[in-house]
Length: 143
Length: 482
Image (cartoon, rainbow over all chains, first blue to last red; front, top):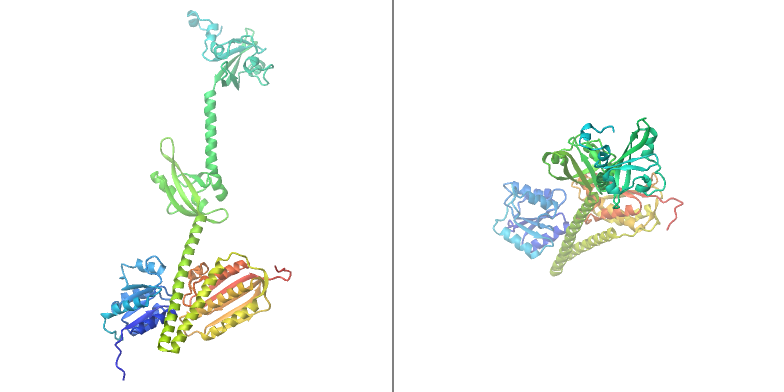
């Protein structure tokens, strides 16, 4: 019987399939265990099923947007501590409706743990994920 | 002499002396127009002309004037009035009111006529200036290149300029809110009411409706008009049509969003390319064919997307009109359906075509080809992005004739769209992301339809799917190809 894994788990949320594959491979190459989701609703199901150590989140997605998912996440006490990195082509306020909505909601929702802009620098991504996951114990599957 | 009182006589004043000293221009003339007597003031200003003909002295004429008040008074014994202009001995012209009165002898016969000249030159000049001012005011008011109205406290229009009348009809007497906005009640916020309340100028931006039912965006400025007592008697409302500016601003904003969308999607495409290269390199490093294949697929997919985006952009930027060559829509549809068949099979989408008879248009075959590719790509994307996995997804592409139009219809039972998404579709503001690209495809499709004299429409319902319908003028048998 295989020993339970102690690899840090990352959830990559992006509706671009190729971006998901790319980020996943970069992170896997650097010792992370990766799952992915194509929209906010799928991401929430993933988080409920198996809590990740870090989430990389695209903001502008069809169906449930990244912003909506992020707000849902932060409103739930059992999930709000999971570090979230916004990985998006738009890294500042006013750039898109999604980010505008997000920044308008700043009073209720704390800012994310980090921003990474596209095009992604793989080394930067790995460094940020590693730093945010460093202090966390490997996540266990949620009840 | 009648009228000379004993008191004057007691002072030693004769009637002749009193007449002579009358402090205005007075003369007495006989039937021959000769000046028998004149007041000293008349002599002083116009010269001594006793026994000379009136018309010769004052008008420089050789014959009596055509319409002479002295003649009239001799004729009917009544007082008469006229207006005249005389030149004094210094050469100054005087506007005069001339009054005549008959002078009778003891037998009651009219033997002479007294003429009194009242100088109204100053009044005439003032009147002329007033007239000029009014004319200038009316010209300014009427020709102002904006809508001008004057309103009372009940928002009734008491005056309006030509530009206003041309666009909204003669609004005088009507209420501003009826004439401008076709409302039955005053507007909730009214700059005219605010000016009546505080005497200050106010501004607002309004949407009004002209005589032709067109909506105009206007910038409104109001100012008080006060009466002599300083009270606000009415308010002037001046509105400038800024519809074109607003339209351009909207287009500019749309363009900004479009460019933002393209940049955003370009970043994703670039990310896909970089990801593909990264995985290919991993494959080479580890000698893993599977990674090389996966990475190379990503590179190819994103190169195709990039090509599509660039071609769409080029097409959207192109200004030339399409050639008018016969194009068989069923033939083009078959070609496009053949191209998409493998991809449809890969995604488990039933791609069906229904081609009802020969349908030809005049146009550019490759443009129509691109339009159909876009519509089918969108339909397949809508199926792929549908969260309902229980559906059997289907795309039906039809070509048929209807009411003289060549009709292309592409129907899917995919994710569908809400009203906001539908409305933004043809502005290039809806990115299908993920696969097809920037949303430029529909902008390009609409451009192709418009360039071919047709139009494109969409019906859609979230969760049920969408139908894109393109209507183009069908090629008539007598049509001549260019």
